Image (cartoon, rainbow, N blue to C red; front, side, top):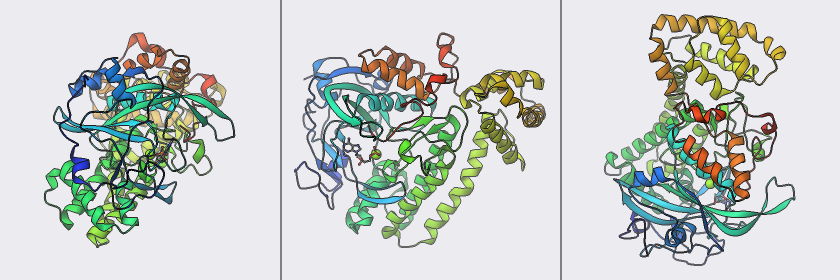
Length: 522
Ligand code: AMP
Ligand code: MG
């Protein structure tokens, strides 16, 4: 069989961590084990929808549409000498402890050292596991297209993320009640091959702390430090604290990136928080169009909007607190953990305002910077300004006078001109401050524009763009997936032939299911 890479052994994760002794593949509680061995489900008629040639090149491997490759990437065949497995973890869902969750529909199919990194390969939607609870272990094409395109888009935006290598249609039909309103439809099934140096989550530690399985907890923490935080050295109380501190920093950096590009994760449960600070589990995520810090795309969360755009840093902190609780049995001291969490608040604000000033092409932060930025954000919210268009236009144009700036505001606002006029004065106030600051900094126009374009993407995977690709894919046409994939390889470049994607959300998409409203059903 042609394989796209060779695997020498089962890899670190399975060799160094405790295994579930049972092979019964039905929902059950798994104790004192980090993973369970499982087999993938046989897909009915697998078909390659797309694969990420850029990522494959990065890995230094080759993939094609051959039956062998398709077999491996759909779960029909397995890598010789590798026992597929599902990972055990728990988590807080929407603020409540949910007990054991685990890989209910993700199965690790390989681990390999490629180009200097140890990568884990995982099929999402490849069948049930002991962690599937009452669900089927499968994934549908619409959510798989979303995960596939967005993982790669995020990577090319410079946002830490798990990667996606391939998207395969399984040929199976999967029943789903998309809006949880009793309307069940059979949808095409699909499998995404996700790839990451690790799929360990906050919830991976929480489950052992919650069950007082401290030995297993320690094994997992020591393993994580050894393989992913190796520079910290031999495990000790001090090492555990530094480990926590580094996870806090990585998480903070990830959230800052989300705020920079306008990404709303939608389900920041602790089982969806990567220990490496990677964006993981693309479900009902979305991209801000009109700037609205209160927005979440997740209809399941519409009551409380717990995971709204503007609160993501607070939720990350809450999740980090849960991680601190999980690590506590190895540290047995509250204060140093609290200090690290306390530090997060200051560092976050500091990094956030630094990032925001860079979006505006400003480099000097002073005591009034936060006020100035908050005034901008209030204006953007009230005037329903398209976030991506606004920052990119600001990066491209020189604004000698307010009038030319106001024309841009009119172009990037979702409000009619008469409604927008109400906000003209506050924009004028903000603009005069902005113009003064730009002048004071004295950076050459070209240089400023270049720096701004490097942090303000021109193209993001707007909610309606993914939906258009899904609508076509469900009819068997995958060309838009390819077009968006290619577009999003270079999100910061002007791509004149792709100008149609540098535009406001069309009216039809405002309230359309799949565009502004998504549920966890996937
Ligand atoms: P999520 O909200 O997608 O992160 O999923 C939360 C938990 O539900 C995880 O343990 C998933 O593995 C599990 N899960 C979600 N969808 C399915 C499914 N279709 N079949 C089995 N488990 C699932
Ligand atoms: Mg999850």
